[in-house]
Image (cartoon, helix red, strand yellow):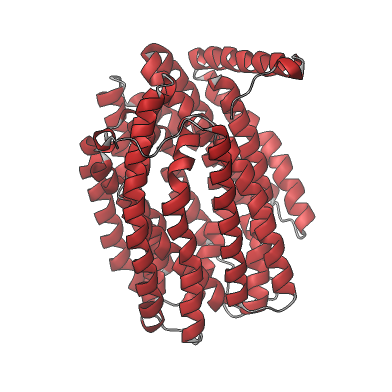
Length: 515
């Protein structure tokens, strides 16, 4: 069951990401052409502020997932309801605070930034953009966590894909017809309400045993306060850059940062889909069979690192040619910068290479034990970025994040290896170094080939060619150094394939499927 759900999560997730990302590339281009870099920077800036407001969740989401893995693996509905009731209670309080924060932000923000945009427009855009988060706290968040813990992320993924296609289609129509930014945000808010309504209908029809009126089990999510520290750290290295650039530079510089971050973020989305598809299986396996868990974890780490490095190799080679095409005709600021791809790739690799270790901490619930290092990471990032942003601008905030990641990524690898897996940290470090060596060799080879596509079709074809070459090459070289992991992985995927084929070959009248 876990293998099949993981397979569904991966297939639906990747399909969804391809559709959403394709549409996500078109929309910012239309924004830039219709509204200019300043509006594009404004939308990105307020989006990052709303990300910070999610701290009002107080770590409940991660603590809830960790608390749900065991009762879900045991089909203990009473315990699941207790956890969900506690989560729902916290989310309602957080939703109230979030609402007041959105209103306060809409009033204050226009007076805190340097812009030529209309004050009323900024206020309405912030209100409409923030109300979706309010509704999520009250009506949707707890149910998404339940689906994730059960390994049914593909349900939410499918719905999100449909809603994203609808939202993007509406935005494209409105943009091409010349409607203003307020109408666009209003349309997006209405579509978000539709998404939340559909999730609630699905839960009521397929999870009739869910009862939020039972006695809340607040003890089950008591680690939420320790989780907050980790979430603050994550928010800082992912979002502080834009806030600092908004304050110390201007919205046009923010727009440059956002475009590079968006394009590299495409790889983020793909690999996050991969790991989120199997995290539930790791979480449930940990509570069922520790020896099997370690083998599954090693297989995941080797595969994940190889895929991450391979995809960022492709992105690094093609980012500048794509950026030239994407920003053609936009002259209010220069978007072509040869240093930014290097800094962004360093940041992304350091962040994603430690993902398996982060997942391990979340599964086991070592939030309290690792919160001090999270505080140090956040402090390094903030201090270095503040010192450098006035000196070297956009490069300064990126350097601050990279230095913080160097510390935290090393620390987290040592912690999980010694304190959780009880083995030498050389194992993940060796895997990281092997992939880094392959990365340097491939980038050098591509430089000699002088790959310079001049049309979108050429960029796409080169992306396909490089992926076909690099992904298998990274996997093959990694497995040469990991024979035991290779054997386990091969057998694991054989089992998944057989289960999927057997399911597909059964007469539909005999297939029983819940949810």
